[in-house]
Length: 339
Length: 158
Image 1: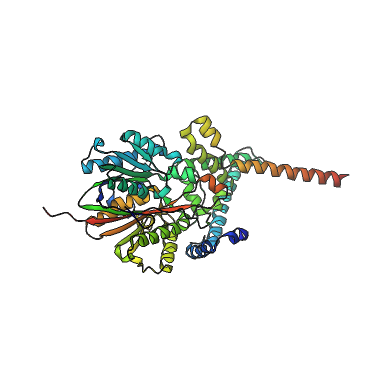
Image 2: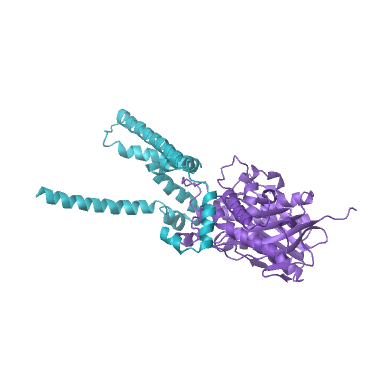
């Protein structure tokens, strides 16, 4: 049901019934390694290319999510997903393996929430019983597409971010208990004229702020409604810049209720500059770490805002600015009856 | 840059100011210092290799240049292939980018990267993707300088 200008409120309790979270070797040394279902030691995953490794991780995450919920492929109506690589081919090949009707998306690093929002909306409108959503990214595959060859010895500035190698899948279906998706806000493309592809957090911050403000406005709720507002991959610079913007809006946001996935995933000693990024960043942190914290009762209501920087290597070379987007879903944990 | 900024709407200008305040600055002074010492160290190794060729082989100071460069390129090839060079590069910046090792690394890393697309269209096409501009503008500026030199020497010689 449409609420306000761009928010859907869900009444039929679409919920994340299970998740699959896969990571690479660098993530295994990170802060939240225990929240992964599967961690790989080999960056190549014994595949011939990094793109195939990314595809493999998505297939594994999907498999884990289905196993956990004990739902077979036949019971899933749609698979919605996407990634960063040219024409989202790794997701497409994974969709071939998964073998269910597929909707491919591109929203850069906001793909995780975009797919979750669409899945919840379809289920809320009785368009499906179970939808698999997911995304994957691979550090080396993203490096070679957006930056330089992986072994090139160029110096990265401190504003750069580290693309997460991993994959996060969420299986969405109706449920009375668990993490219920209560609403979703669709983002606008926001462009503040920044041009540095080595500072994507700084470029994406206004998009996150715009979506958060519109979400609160559409639902007519106060920021204190949420125990946590978690952004996708703003990194250190984007996180601080967006917090400054939110403070300017006088919505009464507190520092401790505002976190970023890109700052949660790695250890401080890991050389990730400004923080983690990539489509998998928001997916692995939220579907793993944050949902576990919700299950433990630490958090009840979470607003999950994934941010995406929608530039291409060509648009950057043509001196275009970096257009950004952020989508949000609110997740509320309903504890089950004790049996 | 200043012209471009003027075209931005006030909201974007305001945000860019906030963003600028939060942006981690590049440590230019330490970067320069690191580049100076690492770059100098690369040259020191080059000098050692060159001296080695002059002492132990039949090379002179003029002819030792080629085998020295070749040796540095081979060392870079191994450091790049074993995934060490990019870490040195992150530390040293221009210190490892400017010497011949930086050029070698640009070629070798591109060649490794595009192996998955095959030897002709992958490695062959993309090998000089990063190093190509150096060759193009290197040759072009050498041509211009040679032209100027020729004109001047003709003019001054007659």
